[in-house]
Length: 460
Image (cartoon, rainbow, N blue to C red):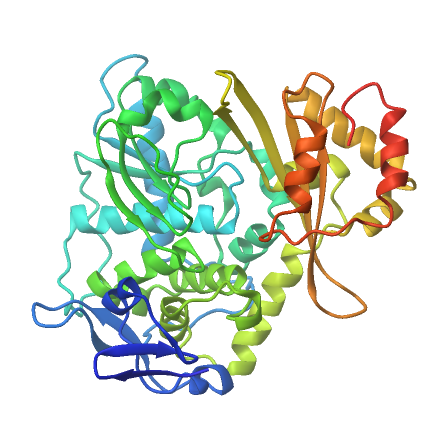
């Protein structure tokens, strides 16, 4: 893989970059160095008046701790998380008064995966740094933010119950490895967030760009969006400050902001740096170009965040996180479904609404059935899951590495209850003819249909 700039045109692997990529990214030396062996200096992206970005080396002053240690680690970032949660709980404890318009809740998507968690925490810290102690792009100060309480409070929020946190196995692993205690995290059962928003608190969305259904009544209170997904064109009454850019991870965009405004924080806070790096590696599958999840900016930011690591060290770090992500040995079928689940309610052409959900499971259906003993047990659990949420359509997407070919593989199973407005024939035709999905019929499809027909609930 290589990048070059010729007569103002930037190329990656021979492909011309889009205008947005050219404007947002400064490409430099052959990137085979990054993939075959890390260069000695990484870069920070520093905006200037004359050039979008100038290369400046980041030389970390605090080493990454690649393994968990019995020695307690305290950094300004960890202190911020504890303080932000404490100040928030004090602020909302006053019943209906006072108004909370000075509180900004940084919120990831419904699935609350690693990218959503780390994006919410790191952006809340970044906004607090800018509020309390603005730092110029060339500042070398690594002093922690002032303890003086600001009039504005930024707090990261994880929209899941605390009991669901261990299901995010890669997050639980990485947080423990860096010394981030879960008591510093704000979960859904710590506070009634709907009441907080009713009192005027503002929303900042990360890792998604349209509020989840339960937060749609507060759409006018969304003030900022940082996301790496396709823009859903949500009709915001008041346009929020928005950065939606197709990259491998939301943490790429947030890392870029740190590198351009607070490079000394990345250099001195090894916990923050490791969280961002681990998330980037997981989301881009260690920058594997075959996965199609890596963009030039992802490569630049991984280079920056891992400058003191050898390739072997970085690969070993990724493998540890990846192994934790795919470790489902202790999870029940229900836990597998809820681990990475998202739900939407959208209008239909006939004036009604369609309530649908998608669960992403890191296990093949074949291995899943073996765990359950028989397919009927899996179907029963999935049907009950869909019924409990009043879904009109429930899709389960599996993702795993094919043991025979080593190729990354996906599978799809869809449940439709009898009352669903979705026609099974139309859905099957849509799925089977999709050029993007490129599905083919599973050899066990007929067996699953026969088993599903015995159920009184949804059929597949």
